Length: 203
Image 1: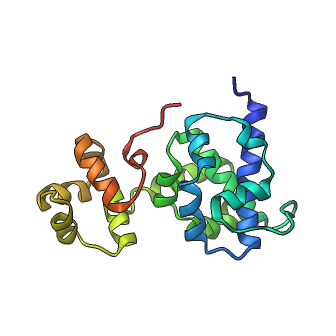
Image 2: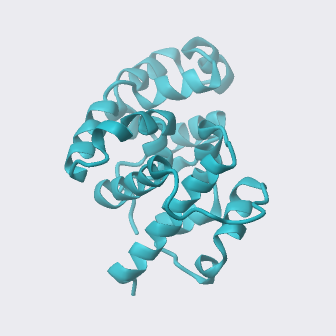
């Protein structure tokens, strides 16, 4: 049974990873990409909190990034990075959306840009902003932009009809209703987890 105290401890670990990433001068797009694919995040999304979470923060960071931190010193510095990590974790808890969806709809560099305005506001203000941000681009449009591809090229390479992809591109609601086969093909094409295409997580 996971208690609120356990969640707070995990949230603290999660948030301090962002501080180490900034300390280490990581590219924030690259860090969020590695983080969303890590065992650490997958375990959080599944609610499977095991002995892995007792590892040192340096070890967890190395597992995620393959970058060795000589001395972990993430307390009391880079408040913007800590706030970003804490905010993503709160969005995860409150919206029950996978982290790859959160990072796709509200990128880490954009989240950093929100710090000065939102860090003293209630989390509800950030949730409202996120709902605005997630409507700016559909999932398919954002993924195509990240991969530097187009719908016609995607259609040729996946075998999915251009008219079908155009429908998915126009509305996330249409994409989320796609067949399992289509979701599998699309997730493989973009090298993302199929969890990106679910309405909510179940854990």
